[in-house]
Image 1: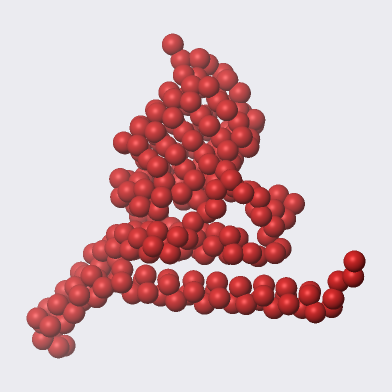
Image 2: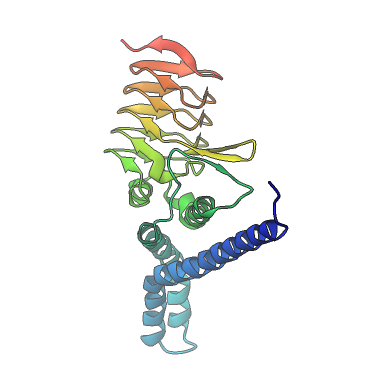
Length: 248
């Protein structure tokens, strides 16, 4: 069977069009998201300018004092507006797939746009709000299934729509936990499930498809490989993580 020279050209053009559309749509959407999120802060600044006289010390003092609160207000608004828009557009990490990165088909580009969108929020708001209920609520808005009293103190957690956390889960600083990996040019995704009362120690790596039972501790700097099933009521540590103590 012979392949027409026109076929590779059409595939290249189609791929170039998909990439261009993905980039343009990402820029347009994030511009609108940031604009909407900045609206409350802009109203605050507008109020200061409206009710103070130009060139006065009072105006300058109020403007200076407004900088920090307006940034915080922008960050909080961004953590609400961004996930709402992502849910409307259905930008998310596709679940349980193996996709070729080189082909850059729509599911891959959807994942790229989702990843870029949540990274923007990480940069602007994550540094200030990680480890707080605000950050947990943001993850929930982005599609994560989270129980009560969940605290995520790491900005290396991603693919929120593939994460299932029970009650009283604590993710320590520097933990890498995501629903995707890239191997041999393939994007592979799978859900990560943590039961109730699970603590992930500092700097640990939790790979895709992992399930950790309730009442479990993962020691600092541990590595839990893909698709591992860890029984509950136990402490694990090491690379790969192995049981070191069963809870009494």
